[in-house]
Length: 336
Image 1: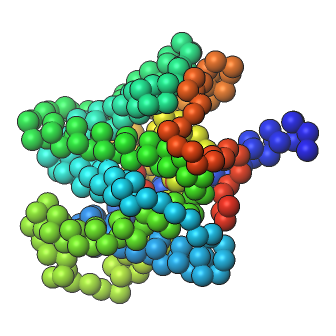
Image 2: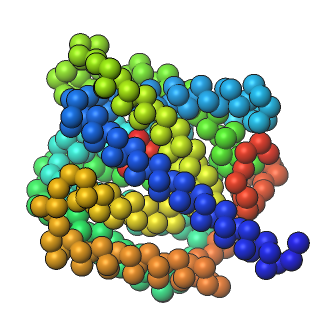
């Protein structure tokens, strides 16, 4: 196969992986918004546990059918990943509860520089001037779109710091584990989903009661709310898988930068489905700035020297592989 053909195939798979993540992520946000706003099911942590139960069920079926090979992941690495992921979920929920919407958005924006710092420190990645400027432009555009009132308190600041660092570490760890142990997306999800499901379903009801002062077992379940929960869990499988695929292919920083395209799409869909009162010139200008920044980032980071890892080795003797195709048998929001 020629180099041009390989490049075209990789570009096609990259685009398909990214669109898969965008469609499922935006879909689950819309479904969860309807579930929580229209039916009052505000138990986000427990719902995430149900998402991972559904994901575990699917990966178990695929493993039984032979589509997922048996692989090994050390228990120490699994525990680290689950801790990062669960602190990310709880931290984001607590940050949203204790902070203003403006400060919550600022905290989410700070995940990009934190992810960059992790890559610079642990992977010795270096960014070109254009790549850095394009990231700044994306941050500026999304900030103009989403940041309104900003108020800070001590406990809210602590929650935001925990949420940002745990999320950045979790996303970095996805890419790290795939490279270190040659794990495909399904393989890694098959290891992590059961542990996350068990831990979140055990802790979820208590965390949700602390956050909402309501008990999940006392919720008035109706046919419509149950159907929305099932739909949310079904879409979440795609969110979880596409996140692992995208981070494995693009790295955590690119996933974060391009991830703000989902923020833009959610804003647009929110205006379409939930009213246009929030649409103003500030939001439109911010969207345009962010989109220009994303296009610039895609071009700058793909240029020679735009973003390169100087340290190509990993602290392991395990043979690694390049994820140039969607791994099946060899990455909610954004949030799930």
